[in-house]
Image (tube, rainbow, N blue to C red):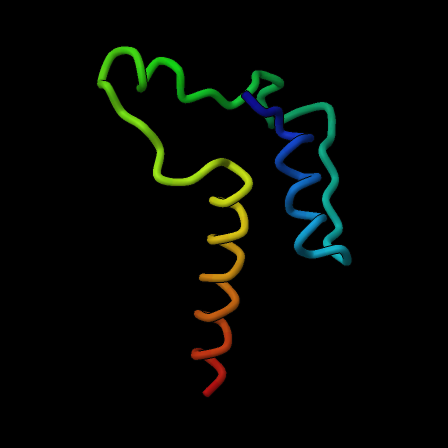
Length: 69
């Protein structure tokens, strides 16, 4: 499980200059969890959360780079 602050810290690992402000409102303070999908659907993620964050950032960067060409 991970919190929004955990995910923000992961993003900062890959994008140190990122400005991330998690204020008091608007974002749930619940942790992110896949346990219910695992139990009820037998689903298993293809990535860890850290890997997924990295993959998303890499994919977005490729998209933005190709958009500039």
